[in-house]
Amino acid sequence: MIQLTAIIERNDDAFFAYIKEIDGCVAGGNTYQEVKLNLEQMLKIAQMEDLVLEKKLSFGYKLKFEVDLVSVFDLIPEVNISQLAKTGNLNPGLLRQYVSGTKKASEAQTAKVMKAIKEVSDKLNSLILVQK
Image (tube, rainbow, N blue to C red; front, side, top):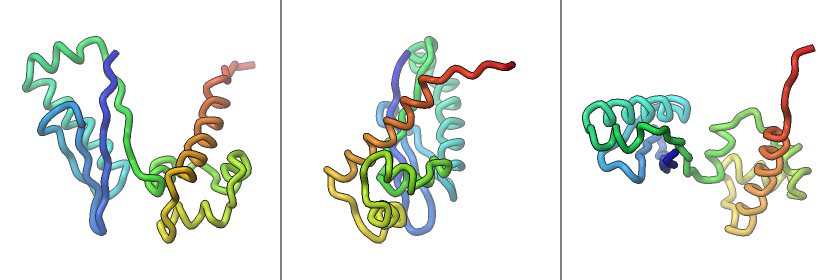
């Protein structure tokens, strides 16, 4: 399986995305969900138009999204900021400022937030749901 990196950026009006490894595979949208969906559609079109790319991705691929810290919470609104702050031993007020974009997190703080998110992710990935 091949991993592809999708870069999502935003300006005041919209969101833009491109796949780092595939020239010309770009998309836009009004929301993160819309730009992700549009990018995935563009990737399908690129595969249909490029036989070499189609063959390269025929064994499957995984899109990994590269975003800024503010965008993480737009992409995953289910993440509870207060609980994440507790998990990562972060100041919840400061984390809210990072999320709102009123304050920019340092590289070290961004790493702490991502470590806390990974902890939550690992917990979820360790579960197996059974029907009783």
